[in-house]
Image (tube, rainbow, N blue to C red; front, side):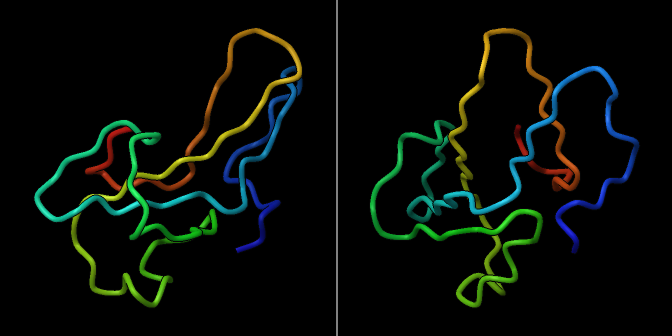
Length: 94
């Protein structure tokens, strides 16, 4: 998918910062639930290119379970932020 593709017109007033690129995708140990993306243990962590689906990672083709994605970014100035997800599973917690 073209990273500059948009499904709707860009906002004409707000500044836009794309978060496309690699996220840290962490798989918690089986049976554990992690909600804090910063609470992760080394081991099952993958660089996850966005936009895409985790099934594109060969080790996760058949994975069905929880994953925690984390992306750290900074803002040039303080204020309100609108984060737009163009493709999130209906079972995801954002």
